[in-house]
Length: 223
Ligand code: ADP
Ligand code: ADP
Image: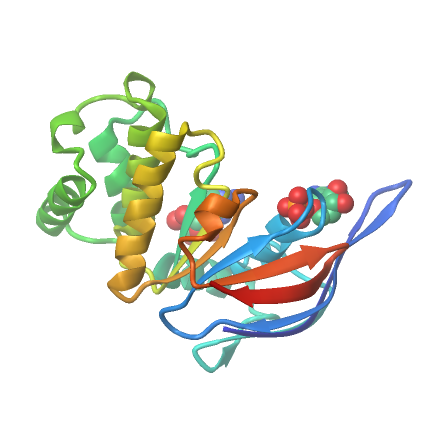
């Protein structure tokens, strides 16, 4: 990932907020980077731009040699499906679907045939230590289990990049550590991870910490 001079401005009737102000940075394949900084400094906006959920006014975003800014909605959506897994603080699971169905959903969207879906979902549930919960609904699970379902869903399409926004924000420390262990394991397997976090403990699992303030990157630290 190479981003250059990203600027993102949110305009409402009364106010104009510059959420990103000339942000530049790179992420090498296989890196695990944390983004930290005070509330409102632009961390989520940056993550949303990396995930093509949000479009900046200016700048460049090159992913595996391809410029992504300026793609149309169809291509953006295709890029997300094939390359990116999202993990959110609030899990964003579908309460009406079982654990199995939540993890299966991205495969259905991607057009994967039923027999292969079955094999891949079963393997993923096993990997997330959730096989015994396959038929349960999200509300029947602990927070840590729900986040493991969300991680399984994020991974099922084998993305190159995981974008995690406060993945342990709603978890107690034991469930939080469980989720961090999974992220570390993934990273050791070669998946690139960019994670926004308020927790120095969580950031200490990553190898590099980028600090933001007022829409800019102010400093970096290798851990
Ligand atoms: P962080 O994740 O670091 O807390 P955000 O990226 O969420 O920061 O927000 C950066 C700034 O942009 C904040 O001032 C926030 O109020 C503003 N902002 C974020 N999203 C929107 C939006 N959809 N509309 C207007 N302003 C927004
Ligand atoms: P399509 O419109 O072709 O179904 P989407 O743009 O809705 O594709 O989504 C593609 C992928 O990007 C989804 O699998 C989803 O994980 C992710 N995604 C897109 N938008 C969001 C969002 N607002 N919140 C969470 N994930 C999203």
